[in-house]
Image 1: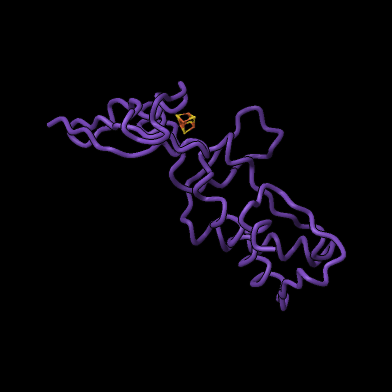
Image 2: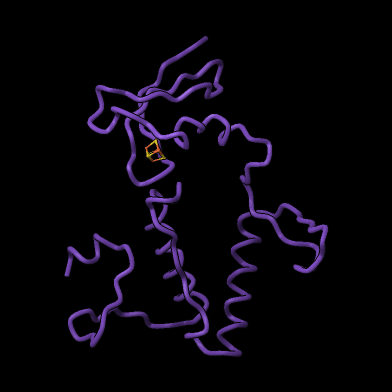
Length: 161
Ligand code: SF4
C-alpha cells in the first residue's frame, strides 16, 4: 500500500513542508509540499531522507568504543541508553573531581546545519541535568545580575531577557 503523508523535513532548522511517500511502512520518497508555507522547494539533503532513515549504518543506539582511539581498526559495542548515560555521568564526575566544574562544557551544533534542530533544547536540558546530578550544584540562573552573558544560537533565551 502506498500512502502520501503530509509533514515537514527535520534535517535542518528550515523545516520545509513535505509530502512523504510511504510504501508498506517504508519511506520511499520525500517531495516538496507546495501547499505548505515553506514547502515550495526542498534541498538534496531533505530529498535524501529515505536513504538516511533506512541506511544500515544509521546509529540508533549508543556505542561504546572497545579499542583505543589510535587503533587503525576501531571497534564498538552497542550498549543501552541507561548504561551510556551512567557511564557519561561517571566520566563527567571524574573530570570535575580532577579539574573542577569548569573543565566540562556542553555545546550543540547549529540547527541550520543539523537534524538536531528539534533536539537542541533537550540536549541543553540534558546538560543541565548532568550538571545538577553529577556536580551536586545548586544551579540558579541569575541573569539580571550576571556581568556578562554569552549568547550561542539561543533565540528563545535572548527574547526572554
Ligand atoms: S534539510 Fe533541506 S529540505 Fe530539509 S528542512 Fe533543511 S533546507 Fe528544507
